[in-house]
Every structure is written in C-alpha cells, then in structure tokens.
Image 1 (cartoon, rainbow, N blue to C red):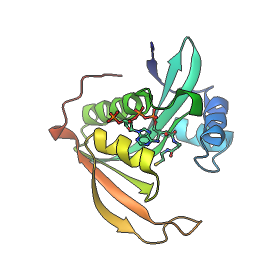
Image 2: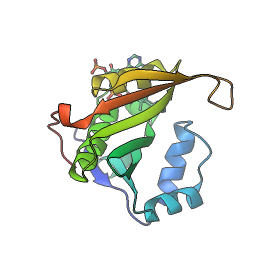
Image 3: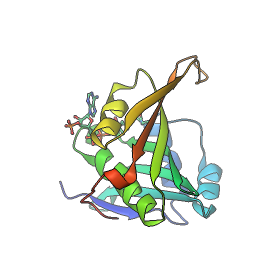
Image 4: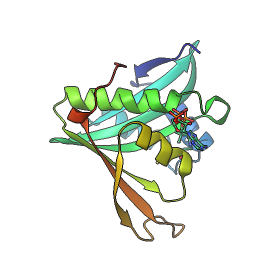
Length: 154
Ligand SMILES: CC(C)(COP(=O)(O)OP(=O)(O)OC[C@H]1O[C@@H](n2cnc3c(N)ncnc32)[C@H](O)[C@@H]1OP(=O)(O)O)[C@@H](O)C(=O)NCCC(=O)NCCS
C-alpha cells in the first residue's frame, strides 16, 4: 500500500471535517478546521493513497510540549499501519520544532487507539475520571520524543 503523508493546507477544511464525521471523532466542522489550519501552533497531516484521502492527524505544539488533538483513519483502511504513519509524522514534526514530549488523552475503552499509541512509544501516565461527555474516563499518555528514533519523515 503506497501511502503518502502530506501537511494539510488551506482548502483541506472540508475533507478534514468529512473525515472527522466518518471516523466519529467529534463535532468539529469546516469552520473549526479552518481555524486549526490557520493556527500557527497546530499541524495537521493527511494520509493519501493515489490522491484519495484516507486518514489524518493533528497536534498543537506549545513551548516544548506537543499535544495530539486528532487521529483518524477511515474504517476500510484501518489496521494497515496508516495510523502509525500519521502519528510518527506528527512526532517528527514536533521534534523538529523543538518539542521534547508529546501528550494525548484517549478514551479508556478505545483499544485500537491505545495500542496504536503504545506502538509509537507512548505510556499511560494518568487517568481523568468521567472526562468525556458520555461519562467515560480518559487515559493520559505521554511520549518522550527524544527517546524515540523515528524512520518516517513528513
Ligand atoms: C485508532 C486508529 C486511528 C488506528 O488506526 P490504524 O491505521 O488502524 O492503526 P495502525 O494500523 O497503524 O495500527 C497500530 C497498532 O495498533 C493495532 N491496532 C489497530 N487497531 C486495532 C484494534 N482494533 N484492536 C487491536 N489492535 C489494533 C495494530 O495492530 C498495530 O499494532 P502492531 O504494530 O503491533 O501491529 C483507527 O482505529 C481509528 O481511526 N479509530 C477511530 C478514531 C479514533 O478512535 N481515534 C483516536 C482518538 S484518541
């Protein structure tokens, strides 16, 4: 599977909002992604196969810490290593911007995402009880970027 990872740019808002819905990530619409793309602190990356968009991920880099905001792969392309490529692309980008750690929150029952993050070098460091609107708990995960040697680059 020849997957290409590129940075999101102005004009990608609509497809990011569509993937947000398909991946059931949350309620961000085109206007939310318009703000995200304009924000100098944020980076969004898109995975493509033959110019078809099949996943995306985004983070915020603030001082030395990056926080993952979104990761989603459309259902028919899951479990092919695309989620990992997207997270690794964000990790490399954050490292290049001078970040030394990356953090995220994930629903405690989201086995696929937790496994993905563990494979990328994240560890569970805390739990936020009833963090999400549906009452489920969040696990807080972090990764020391300098400890992780990543092959893929953006
Ligand atoms: C989480 C998600 C992004 C993973 O994407 P993906 O492309 O399937 O992930 P990868 O193929 O790179 O898999 C990475 C690792 O996780 C494992 N994994 C992926 N899905 C899994 C599942 N459903 N159950 C168990 N392990 C799973 C893979 O086997 C792989 O481990 P390995 O390296 O030991 O083989 C995808 O399932 C998704 O979009 N889910 C809905 C949105 C979501 O929950 N996003 C995260 C919000 S915090």
